[in-house]
Length: 295
Image (tube, rainbow, N blue to C red; front, side):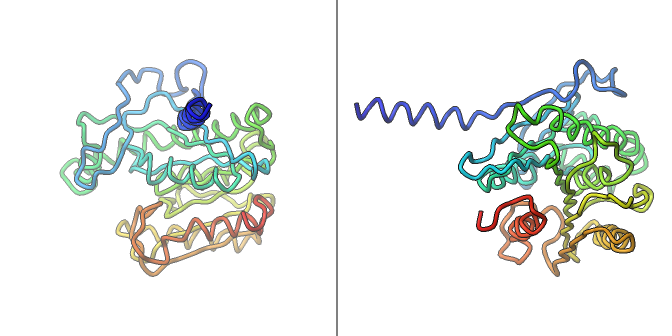
């Protein structure tokens, strides 16, 4: 009997470890029908960062909420990566696991990324940002940005449409994202429809220049922002501008600007106050009514 119990627990554990991944679109993603390269995943880079790149078919990976704590809130998580890759663990799966344990059903979004020809997308990004290909790299980004934003909106609409299937409330679908995943996230707070309006948005050290921002509507979703003043990509002003625009429109907004933390801190531990941004996010979700106290 003891062996049977152990076997049942093992099978249950393995089942929980296998996350469900669903296609965001039926057929080819609109606007990139000719893309035919192969999606890849590895950590072959200087900092051993697990990355997914050459994403052609956007997907959502589902992390069900702890049944004992689930309250109907769900969140779409958008990893960053310079529009050329996705930091799939530090800014994706690790965030989803943390939130699921708190009763929030999480969906990690693999949105479309620009094509690269190497197996080291991190080095490709740095070379593109600082090397002789800078202009070409920027052009690739500009062509990809509308597609990534469209994927974020489609993800919100998908979760809302399938809310009953995942045991979540259609009016409690939020979105959080990091760096350029923050672009996807923050963009969902502008020019939304009834199907694509998120219940809340949380851009974390987002790339969100004024050119990508729009008017803050009177029913704009509440926003939580976190960033570090020493962001190496100088993105702190983007967060401040988002905050200021929301404040001017008298919409609910909270900004945490840490002195140190750099860019891309995500779920990394650096023994800094920025390590605890996700606890502050949970506090904010509780205050906004999307989580229960003491979860």
